[in-house]
Length: 65
Image (cartoon, rainbow, N blue to C red):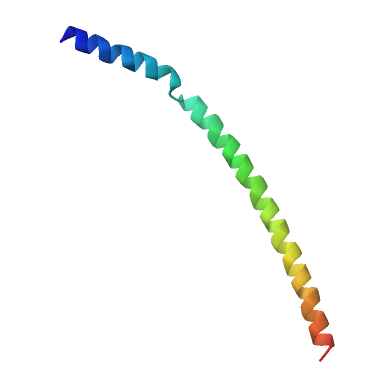
């Protein structure tokens, strides 16, 4: 039974260094949050450009009537 417990403890000791800490998770969340803000701003810019283009196309169509 002690050998089994020792083997399990050894496996746990091998896995522990690979687990993320609270600080690792917090840093990762901060990085993801910053990236999402950048993507959000890019998307807003793309939507704005598309809306402006659509407005110009609609003005041209109205002018032809």
